[in-house]
Structures are given as C-alpha cells and as structure tokens.
Image (cartoon, rainbow, N blue to C red):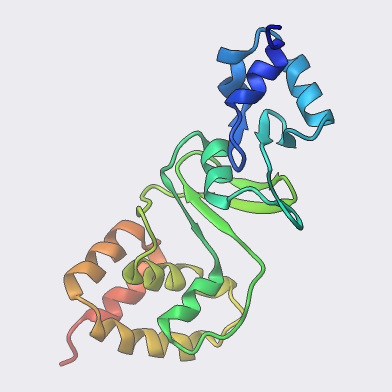
Length: 195
C-alpha cells in the first residue's frame, strides 16, 4: 500500500531540525493541513507562526531546539552572532554579574521575539563577526557597559590594561567595525600613547 502524503512528508523531517513553513512546500500540496496534523500528533512543535521544530526524543523527554538552528531558521540566514553579557566574564576583567539574556546581532531584525519558550532580543548591527572573538567581546563590552550592573569606572580601568595585551591591529579593526560612537571615542582615548 502506498504511504499517504502525510507519511511521505514525515520521512523528510529530521529530529532536531527547525523548519519554516515554506521548507515543507516541496513535499506537501496541503502544507497547512499537514502542519496542523503534525503538531497535533507531536511530530512537530510550533515555535511561532511559520516556524516549527522536529523534536529529538530521549529517554527522559525531548531536547529543545538548538539555539543556532532556531535563530538561523527565524532570520533565514546564518549571518548573525548570539551573545550573552555572561560572555564578558571570560575576558577576566572582574565582571561577575550573571545575566539571563541572549542577544542576536544581525542585519535583518530588531526587537524581542518569542521563539518557542525562549525570549530572544535581536539587534540590528551593520557589521557582524562570524564568531565572538576576544577583540569583539572587548569592544562590545564597552558598547554595552552603560546597561550592565557593573562598576563602570573599575571595568574601564581593567579594559585599558587588557587592551595593552591584545594585538593592536586586531583591536583597532574590531573598534572600527563593531564600536558604537561612544566606544570608539573611549578606545581612542585608551589607545593613544601616553606622553
């Protein structure tokens, strides 16, 4: 007996993947009806309008969608970087606060969106690194310092010391690409040779 179109569609779904509605069009003539059936039977979970997750099932339940996959499907691009203010702690500058916040720097969306059971803040930026380097994190920390629960002057003083340890060309490039106006001015002051 020939499998139904719904069964054929199920064969194309891979556990752990996030799908947009249009991703399923090649395998379904009635995509909306099939999406409804697949969410009812638990094959897919609706994350938001037009965005679905095929859950990976384990002995103790289901794994949530991979953050990178989720953001990639939402933005329809892989040109973004996900950052948390907690990443600044790895710079060893005495920042100690822990934050329950994820920010996606990208070139398409701006605002806070619910993706499944996560709230994610998207910020449009002109330039986005492929990954968060030490130089990028240092510049971003200066960009965001005013919104963090840290002692601003103490952190800036430690940033000044850290900047001396980093390759000056890489840091200057990061400041030029990723620094907001105030950060560029702060680094200009920090990096000028003392007389």
